[in-house]
Amino acid sequence: MNPPAIVIGAGPAGLMAAQRLAENGYGVAVYDAMPTPGRKLLRAGIGGLNLTHSEPLPAFAARFGPACPLFSRLLAEFGPDAVRAWAADLGIPTFVGTSGRVFPADFKAAPLLRSWLRRLRAAGVTLHLRHRWQGWTDDGGLRFATPDGEIAVTARAAVLALGGGSWPHLGSDGAWVGQMAARGIAVTPLQPANCGFDVAWSPFFRDRFAGTPVKAVALRFGDATIRGEFVISTYGIEGSAVYALSARLRDAIARDGQAVLRLDLKPDWPAERLTAALSAPRGSRSLSTHLEKTARLKGVAVALLRECAPDAGALSTTLKALPLTLTRPRPLAEAISSAGGVGLDQVDGDLMLTRLPGTFVAGEMLDWEAPTGGYLLTGCLATGHAAGLGAARYLDAVSKPPGN
Image 1 (cartoon, helix red, strand yellow):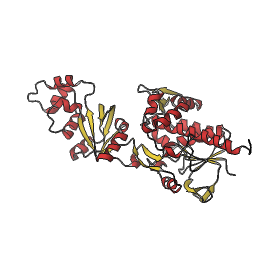
Image 2 (image 1 turned 90 degrees about the horizontal axis):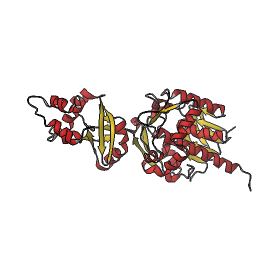
Image 3 (image 1 turned 30 degrees about the vertical axis):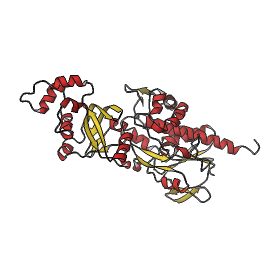
Image 4 (image 1 turned 45 degrees about the vertical axis):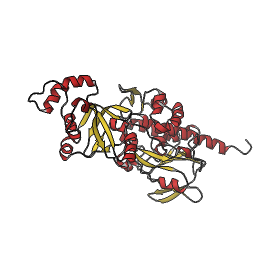
């Protein structure tokens, strides 16, 4: 017997939608193409699961850029405090780190996912794995390819939470884009978000420094400055400070063919102090030795200066704004997340597709992006919360007898 509600996608957004539907008394079946649920969540938690951020709500919502108006509302309903309360209800205590980011007490994703799945099963949610969504049947049923052949399932409400297009080996392959287009639903092309960028390194620099972190720096692009660190890769740069600027950098490259990122290699030193230090007599010392003795710069920082500005005149000025030319973002499949997706003008306030009543969209399928640091995961949970409650309200309405 078909349940009244189906959720397609067993990531954070889909599981949250299933939880809200079950809490409202509806039977729910969750379908996912992968052999196990929550694969991307587990992968994101390898270095410590960053659940959310303790930043005040207005600043938190602003991290969603053009989608800020939507997320101001969604986060007011299920924001950082609600995420922490939800985790605590699953038996997972959390703490706020020195950076303001929020983590499980043990930093791990697996215990949270296990507890969550137990809660869902206890609430009657059924999970169907290795079921890859293939679109709709002519009469509106949902088609799935399974190890035993294709099946069709019908439900009065469905939540689509199929992810974006990053890390396709974990299930988010963007294959749903064509299905949306076939139904006349506008989809903004998927693009990499929270991604690295290509730099035309010299062979010497690439071979010598690939894998080396560049710490305690500031990255500036336009009117945005991010302090933190990044990593030199064989192809260019990656890391948290780069990801925070990735949307601006990606869009600039699409517009101009390249983006020039400015590196401040001594962000804690005012320009006047750096100028005074570097004015000390150099004598017979090499440039590398001079920079180490006067400005405490060495290793990869000095190599970046030689690589990006070999003929620099005013050293202090160059070190405060070292130009690094980025030629393209890394491919979508390598990105942590994706931008683009189902247009926000295609859904109503409950995240229901206006062209397909009873069908809701959650998570990275929607056209929004946010930086890492807890914002991305919270955004997925908030949309799953909204879509699940919206689907429950829809089922309430269509289940009422005529005249009520």
